[in-house]
Image (cartoon, rainbow, N blue to C red):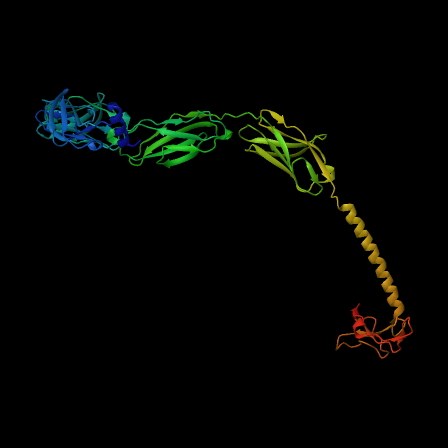
Length: 480
């Protein structure tokens, strides 16, 4: 959530406990100082509040009000700060002691920080045989004065530290003990979910939640989400949330998240949580047909639709015909409806049909639907007409062939009072188109054309008058 929004919300509601606290930084950044040293304190984090004067408190009493956010002090004890409507900061405790040797350690130390431990004499006298101790056990020693460097601190570096050294070659001095507390850079992540037992096929949101101390609010973190066994759902992204749009049965299992810094590398994993899916039982299995009513013409497409009113996850649909044990078809879908198709239904497909829906727990049948298959109504009539036409055409063809054969015996065909002249059509340039007798060869492709000519002898009509064939009454040339 945006810090400015949090601030505004807290100011309106009066809940100052939820406001971000200022943080006091120390320079030099030690916990223990020699008596008389001066220390600069800075009240940081005031960007969340209106600019103004800073109030400083020492041992619970207001010490001073400064125009900026800095103050210089030299007295031991706890210090706090605040500005305008901000809450009081957490206290920092400064130690000023009258000794000749102290062990300086960082006041604020976090996981991943590089640390320096410094054994120092008050007047900067040269020291020899310097030894550092942790929890009363030596862990580092030097012939001459030297600092201890920890390149990347971890929680295991926390403990009680002190040092010993020799002054002027023979005078051994011991520092007071100081507690080094390594703070978490961020808390161990906690994986939370909107529902640990989601309904199969529903949306699930996973969120990897952590707490970051205000001193480290600017660190960059990467988030990863995992599912057992070793499935990476999201790897090293800046998003704290992961959405699973549809949670299926096979998604059940252990889930956890991992958070790590960009630099230096600090990595932490959450405790795993168990996610198990809940299934909605199947109910209301129903079958319908298309076209509606179950009356279909032979050769037409027929669709059997099987559906359920409720149910989740993968459902197995099966189709049956009453009186037979064989399954017509089977489909397993993550859907509430499925279809079985006859691309071209036959007369023998008529009967009663039903479907079942199976959820791996119970098999529920639908009601049965009757399918009636009718033959095409135009079939017998068309077949009869076609047979009659073929028969008529066959007889006509035979008659024409017989007639033409008979007429070819005479050189000039005569029908009624019209004289026909026979002409052969051949392609020029082909040899053997006709022999000397004027007859076309039998093996050549020829065409015969009959044209009408006037009868030389006028024929009398019923009244005894003579009549000739007019030009308009000539027959149209016909090709065979």
